[in-house]
Length: 85
Image (cartoon, rainbow, N blue to C red; front, side, top):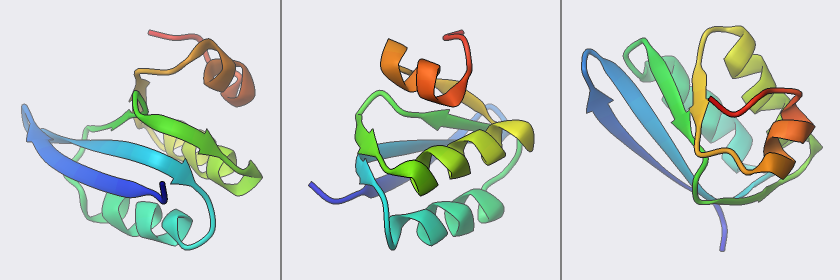
């Protein structure tokens, strides 16, 4: 499965759900979607199957910019250097 992004409003902010594989052309699309989403931004990675190095890097950068990540597997949390919250 390629990457699918779903965006929905959430209490004044936005939730971006990432499904499938985050790589290649999906990375600039994720950047665009997040740039146009209302803050605060939540990235739901419950259905993220895998991500290449660039995919991990964009998630990490979005977190540094203030996004919160939910639905992380222990493996993804380790890759991102984050604790599941």
